Length: 291
Image (cartoon, rainbow, N blue to C red; front, side, top):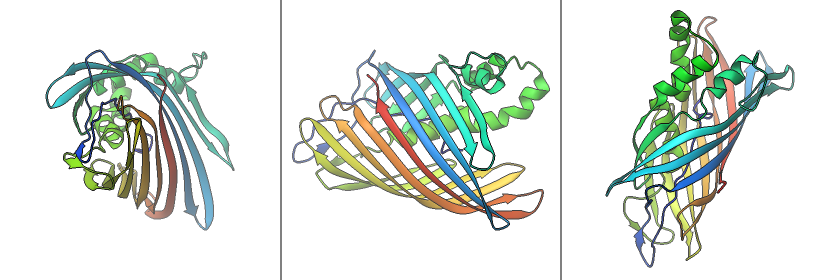
């Protein structure tokens, strides 16, 4: 789900007086590390009984600025750590995968280890809009290799599901949700602007510059969201809203913390049984700079 999907914000230097342009301005060879923590609470009404699933994801990503041009910035990202825990009050712990796990028999943890230190290249506009991402195919191939999965038929049968999370298109849409919030115009305090996220989590965003001084600036956002996850077995379409708060350093432009809270409701259609299951997802995602 896009909600897991992994994300980031990049350092910038900002100049804002009475009115000015907020944009990313990076230097080649800049590096920074981002920690993401995501919590997702899923409730499904199955024959009048609530089934609850809690997902918790933690990741650490390292970024390096490779090239800076007039209109775009090229960055390289590598995963440094990835952990996911899935649990249920009724069923207990369903999954605990961690790249720090030393147990070679844990297949999911081994696949997660395959994501580590595999470079993904992002080309980003100065507003944060992602023009392109490459490296997703290599990331997925490394995951299969790390788990010692070499059978072509098995890889082909599972590749599409991995592409939903780690493919280049999925990564592009996911990262953009956390990078693309700056305006393409000059703004003053309390000015607003809009943009749109595409993909499995489509959002129509409205942003506001709440505060700015020489040390910090704050941007808030609200969005109407459609979340979808569609494959041959299940169709899930949820609608809802989310709120984003971004605190950043005006001198470097680097965010200090981002919080995204969302609530989405709708139905999950199980095609084999021709059943619609009422579904609600509440999520909180935070991003922090570690260096």
